Amino acid sequence: MITALALLAALPFATGDGSAAVSYVEVPAATFRSVLPPDGKDAPARVAAYALRAAPVTNAEFLAFVRTNGDWRRDRVARVFADDRYLAHWPAADAVADAQAAQPVTQVSWFAAQAFCEAEGARLPTWHEWELVAAADEKRRDARDDPAWRESILAWYSRSSNTPLPAVMSGPANAWGAHDMHGLVWEWVDDYAAMMVSGDNREQGDPDLLKFCGAGALSVSDRENYAVLMRTAMLSSLAAVDTTRNLGFRCARDDTGKSP
Image 1 (cartoon, one colour):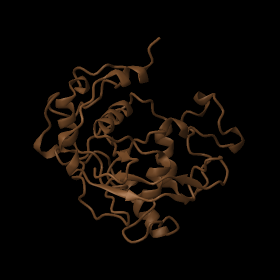
Image 2 (image 1 turned 90 degrees about the vertical axis):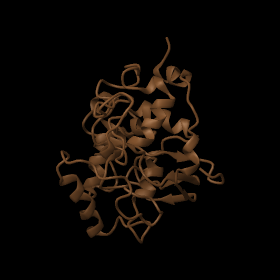
Image 3 (image 1 turned 30 degrees about the vertical axis):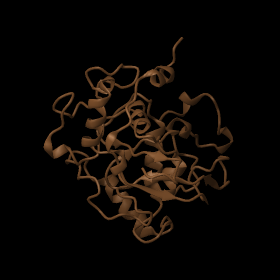
Image 4 (image 1 turned 90 degrees about the horizontal axis):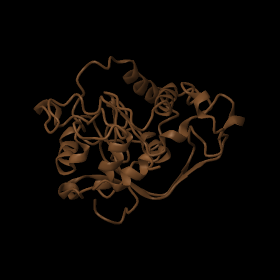
């Protein structure tokens, strides 16, 4: 039996000609307090040095990828890789509206996001890699203990999702040089499926993931950070083929010594 991942590996990927213009920010190796401790209790999270895309991937960038890699057009993609809402907001399978070009691409599956990153010589970031950079405000690399910062993030979650998305990089960069970690779209991470957790820390690693559906993030260590609880719960409820109108992605690289 051929698995979905095996099929994904067999698809042709082009290396994007414009990748040299893509901005990545370098992040040194770090040990930090994660809301999802590796041991399910209180162990610090450790990440190796990597580079993260400075902003989410835009519709225009994903359109260029689709035009080069036709198997990822919405009218050609295999349903094992994306649901029927995949890129449904585009006016055509190979076109985006002018107003959409600079907006973050959404309605993309985990498979499609990973394929784009592969074509760029990158990958999706892990949760801990994403979380490390997302903990920063404009001046501090870890602003999570600031109630005002938490409230500013939570305010985004309370806004209506029916309004058009702003353009990528509309706001200022955080202390790492990354834009739109909050306040724009949710973002895929490579290990989203490993975020299925229960309310009882003793059950970490239980293979019966279905019984945790809808209960993701209950065992995170930072229970006061409601915005993070919402994000982890949402990601843990997804399947790799799922798409939503507020879910996008950015890529990460291991080879920080090379120019993107």
